[in-house]
Image 1 (tube, rainbow over the protein chains, first blue to last red):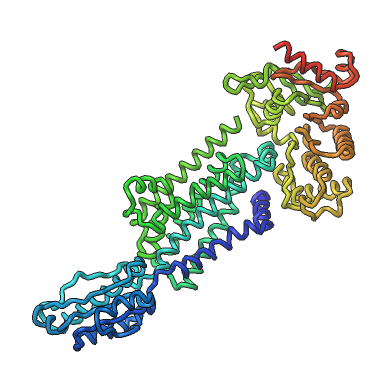
Image 2: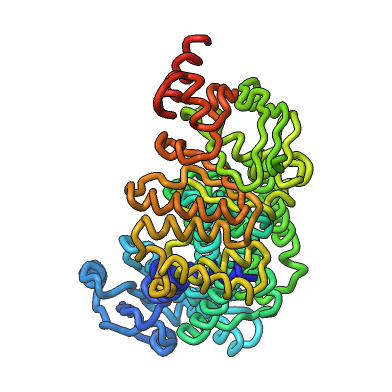
Length: 365
Length: 246
């Protein structure tokens, strides 16, 4: 169909469109992957060992050999704790109390204090989590050695699904969700309003082409390119960050197609409402991009939001796709676990298409 | 006897309680250049949209190229060409690509489009521009090209909505020569314009005011009737008197 062809020509002739289509996804994925990385690697810690016995030596060795931490120095007394944390290089101090192994044997428990720098809350939480995990691991080993009653009883802290706490696992799904809504909704609404603004839409409407053909001609190229984008992002995250798709790739691609289709119909709807390109851009960016970043659970967990925001976030479709894609990519679950979200996305799509058709007809009357 | 390609009888178009077209009746004959004049907001655009199958009449009978505008707008669309006041070609496509695109939209065979395309480029002395982007062409050339593209599929009628806006007098002259040539081939020209000197070039003109056609005749006939020397004076007289009578 020549009309689809023409849309491809528009896209490939316009440098800016190309950048938005392919540059932004690549840059976003790399940016989020590297800069906002939440991985812990060789974080500097200090150890204040007031007991100096075999158990404390073993535990601190275990911590250092985990690869997550480097021992910056051994401290001698409590005054040093404040000093090293203020130096900012040291992220945490591990303190073993006096007579550590004696207490462990006599009382069945001994305590380790972890002091972190709370001025960097993310880092502090992360180091605490990692250290707690290592210590509980050590507990298990100890208990296993002394058959019978456990020596140290601590709640087991383990990260499900993301045992190495790879930050990219969280960002890749978010970035795909964001990019797709950006490209599909923004680009389709721009390209349709552009025809309106330049007066070419008038000519198309007077031609024997049916409105549906016009819209399809606009949408098909973006559908194909967005799909290429999904594959590009998945490839990038796999090659650069070593993230595999745990679940079925086929399911992931089919769900992505549904999501792309939904975003495209949203773009068409925006274009029927917007009078010109500026309006289309404004609605797409402010109306879709910000809520996607803030409310979809991409960065801030929805469960932690005040009730009213949770309700608001329910009307933004990206929220559901994030659930779907996280489930498939990170947890490796099948369709049975995401059918509800899929259904909601499908309903959104139908609603957007229905509304667009109504708007389109009203305009023609 | 002249053959009517457009025949409008008692056309009414209402938007809510607003009457945009108030019982219009007129005929346009085959091969004629029909000028459709009126002040802004007189209802010209509404009538044009109905004639081109974009909008349905509220009541009345509208036949364009033999098809009913209320029932067969799609068949009308196949038989007309259209060029609007805003520029209607794609700036980021080349001249040839634009021609291929529009030919394709009107369902012409590729070989035929190609043949007509080369013919057209030659006639307009456009050969050297064939592979240039539209945005590289001066406005006058673009306008001529847009017109040629609008009649590429040899429609029975071509609608021109203020085709010469913003074009210099010389190009306008050349443009009208193209219109004459096209009309001579038997294609009916239906043109709206703001330029009263252009109205003089038409075979017949109609003047609309507040939703009604208040005058319809040859330019000379109108001048005689209103006892003035130019269509411009006719127009001013009619629009003024209309204002007073309301």
